[in-house]
Length: 259
Image (tube, rainbow, N blue to C red):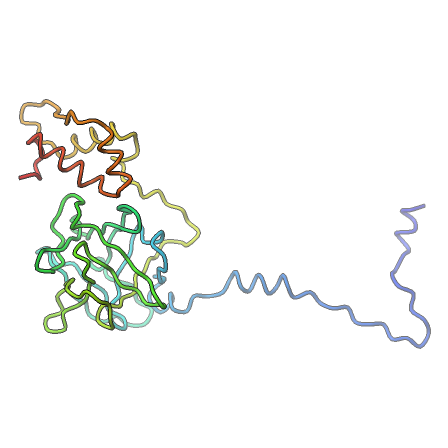
C-alpha cells in the first residue's frame, strides 16, 4: 500500500481559486560551482603564473616580478638583472624562472637555471654562484598589508638598482623599490615533494649522501665526520642543516667546494 500511495501522491492539495506557488530554484550549488571555476584574471595576464601569498607556496618553479610586468633574470656570469617587460598573457622567460626549496622556518633557497644558488655578498650584491646552501643563500619572503618583500641574510631587502638594473639587497626597510610579487605556475591543489633527493633519509644517511655528492674521492675512500648526530639534529631544528653539513665536510678537507 505504501508504494501505491507514494505513486499517486502529488504534494499539497490545491484548492479551487488558489494559484500554485512557483517552486523556488536552488542556486546554491550553481553558486558554489561558479566559485570553484572562478578565473584568476591576474594569473591569465601573466601566462598562468599566480601570486604567492604564503611561504609554504614558495616552492618549485617561481619567478620574481618587479615593476609592472618584468622579472628578475639570471645572467651567465652569476649576476642578475631586471628583464624586459612582457606583453599581457606572457609568462617569464626560462632565464627568469628559479627553483625554490624550503631552507628552515619561513626561509627558502633559490636556484637559478644555471644550477647555482642565489646568495648575497657583504656589499649587498645578489649573486648566483654557490653550489651549496649556506647562511648567505637563505631568503625570507615577508608579506604585510598586501605587499611582498624578500629579506636577505644581512637583513636587507632585495631591490633593483634603478641606475643599471642590477639586483641588490641593501635597504633595511621595504618601500616601492623593494616590493615585488612572487609568482608560481604550479597547480594550487597539487602537493609536491620538494625535499632534495639527498635528504630523503635519516640524518646519518643524509650526511653520507652529501659526502658522496661533493667529495673528491682522490683515494676512493669515503670520509665521514666523526661528530655525533646531535649536532645535525640541532642544525635541522634551527634551519641551518646545509651550513652544518658543509662545515663538517670542510673539516675533513675532502669537499671539492670547500677551501
